[in-house]
Length: 118
Image (cartoon, rainbow, N blue to C red; front, top):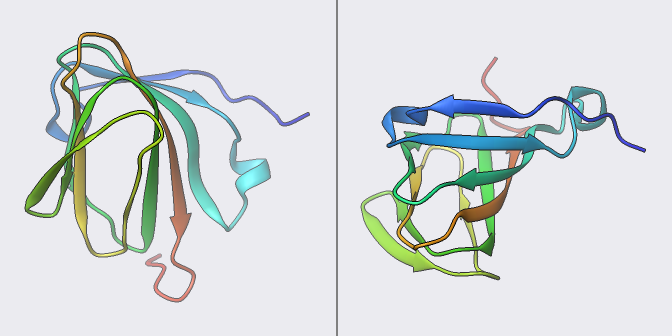
């Protein structure tokens, strides 16, 4: 059984609206040098994770439920359950709940081992 770090709540994450609730799936003991974060994230109606740049890592989002507006650099896309997106090292992204129910997604941040910044 994996260790279970506590739930984290972040207000106005990366300049976003409202709060994001992060339920950690695995912590540092499991992720080690391969990944920084592995969570089930919830954005309530009207909440968002602000646009932010990845340096030395990349992040994958996989939508479980709800409706999202995903920003990938300067473009935006609607995402629905079953959709996935990856923000590569050096790029920017953000996500907003544009639906009537909670937006729930998996977030996985993997280190770019060739370009990891210390």
